[in-house]
Image 1 (cartoon, helix red, strand yellow):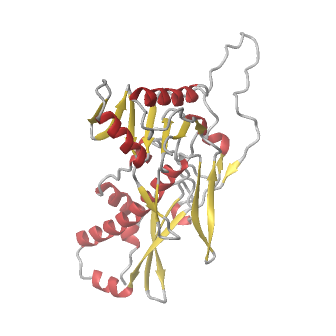
Image 2 (cartoon, rainbow, N blue to C red; image 1 turned 135 degrees about the vertical axis):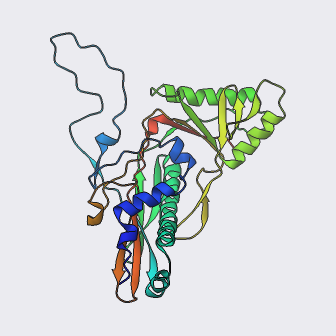
Image 3 (tube, rainbow, N blue to C red; image 1 turned 60 degrees about the vertical axis):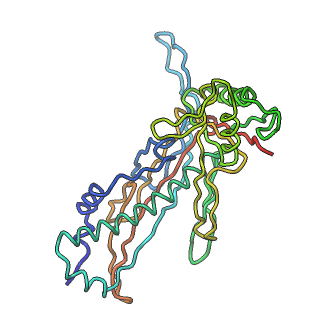
Length: 324
């Protein structure tokens, strides 16, 4: 009897992932490079982020001081899974019997690639949206749509003294505003390792402003990362879109008219919670896939799961609406 289990065993999945090209997603790779795996389905808030603070010296012989922001009370987040499957019919399996071992491995790698890319793409959208401080995502439950909400509160904000689309705006005005955003982060102990994003409309305005300028500001395109460099502040265009799984409508990751300044050293991370599957040993994995046999219709479902939970420190992000 033809059985898919061997093609999607733990060893086979590891081999497939090793053979497939590395997936690169800009937001995850830049802002969420820290991706711990937790072996619990719940994530303790204090394990995710407590803040990093300067500490006093404690005189010898005195008791230690409690770390700021750790209360002893444990609050939990409960991540919901990304859970998707691909159906493989008995007729398709009948045809697969004609393939040799290497061809079967290539087939399983292709299916694995489709599923991992879908999960990675979804996670990338979450990571982009959560840099606003919160995200709301469609959640399917018992045949109906609900909302999956992750909310860390409001990010910092600065109001520009002159909008970037104003006829009298200058490079100096833009630089001053960026400096004020950095200073706002500095008031909370951040602002040293900056990633600055502009929505498409804001980037176009800045690009035209810098291109027409005769100052030392310049348009910089180095290491494949395009950015407008204004006095050392490199602003990058974030024009990515995502498809809403419920409405199928496309939407922008970065809201229009907006600048967003993110300190990469502020503790943002992307933990993975334990997958609700015995075959995954109930541990945290970025990606898990397994076959499940069906009787009617006859065939297999290839089920993939992941529980990413993007975490941001809102005190390390500053946002500004700079166009009317």
